[in-house]
Image 1 (cartoon, rainbow, N blue to C red):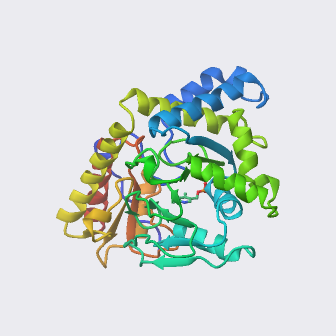
Image 2 (cartoon, rainbow, N blue to C red; image 1 turned 135 degrees about the vertical axis):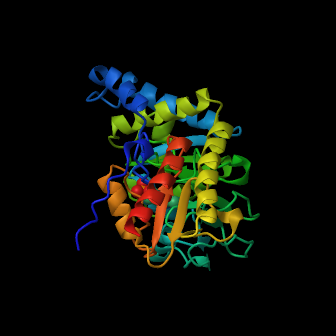
Image 3 (cartoon, rainbow, N blue to C red; image 1 turned 120 degrees about the horizontal axis):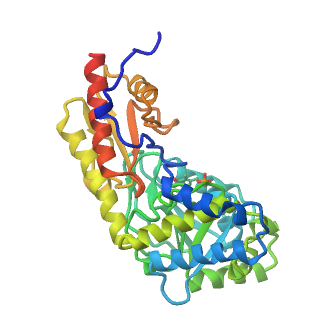
Length: 371
Ligand SMILES: *Cc1c(COP(=O)(O)O)cnc(C)c1O
């Protein structure tokens, strides 16, 4: 069956049709800033001042954006969040972690730590997709880990400390769009292709003094750690505003531009409010429209950075997303493995709330035409 030939009227279309949850929309101003310095920056040594100044700018900006308490350090390395899962497995867990798994990304950290032959299997707290589960104090556990925002389902949880272990928060899709008090965590880690509207391939982690100490302790214990995944190597390089191996220079500059843009607009409070405004537009529409339902039933768990909306039986979300795509409105498909009749929409700071409103009108139009 071919795709129905539905033209969405131009006046309904968003100004920017990018709604992917990562890689996500990069603002034209970021691209212009990169372009403006390109000749002196791209293709130059990452050991020289020009690039290290941008790494320093990014590290400084992130510490300011998240209000890093005294002694916390911004550390970075290559390989994105997926590499950081291995870094944390090798470098932050002494023996055993307790992990929350309520979607694909939380489960991937469970898989990484389960596979590590030098660790006991993690204690895993699970909830079905669309719900969430809290961590809780447990004997014999020295690390607690949870996603802040489960990008595969659109469920988000508050960042809250459990006493008796290091706290790790996967903030890959939350950092820069969700509130956080860093005193409640020891390791707030993320990648810049989501709320920071940059390219992928980098991981960033804000580490508390306790996490820095744990990394040093495990390093000193003699555990075999590949240099590429050695957190102490990343810490040493980050202190010199470098990465262990060659980073993507565009990723760093685009991320630094985004952090400074958020700071110039009022900081994290501003971006959190902006995402919440987009989320209210999406969920209000999903609640009042007869063929849509927010997938996350508990309003308190509904993410304000990644929105998921189920469509009624009889309206094929795959067709709706494909028609939207044919009209330049991209990447509203659900997380592939979730397998639901659903639209998933990024609500990151770069995305204009007005464009989320426009998207809802486009969906209404397409569904009306399909009927
Ligand atoms: C996107 C995402 C990841 C994976 O990030 P990569 O940089 O592609 O490895 C991990 N966790 C969460 C919560 C994500 O949203």
